[in-house]
Image: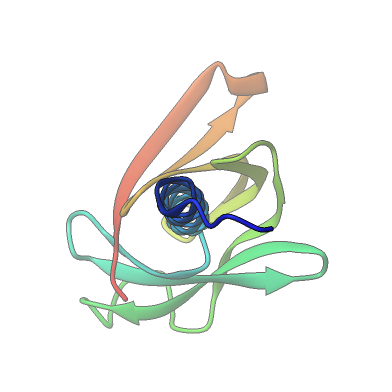
Length: 134
């Protein structure tokens, strides 16, 4: 004879629901650390779209506040960006202002992104903050 234990059944359902909720939140948290999408510079001067390219990640200018800036729409400013860990990528960063390419890094923290361009093995770096635009 099979006896149905209602309390045990409800406890099993609660555990399964909790596990499912934790898994769902974990996936959403992981997605929040992705760099793909459109990001606006904190000063509002430009927007860059990060998307997959050549096995890595590239960033292309998609909007400029000042159409007379040295950058232009469609210009690749981040390229060969490879994932370094859960929240960062490393590769190359092009600065349209001086026409030079630097070793670059992207770090994502939720809806914020920080880019860095460095020379002399990371001795001198310039960073820029971005916010997710989409």
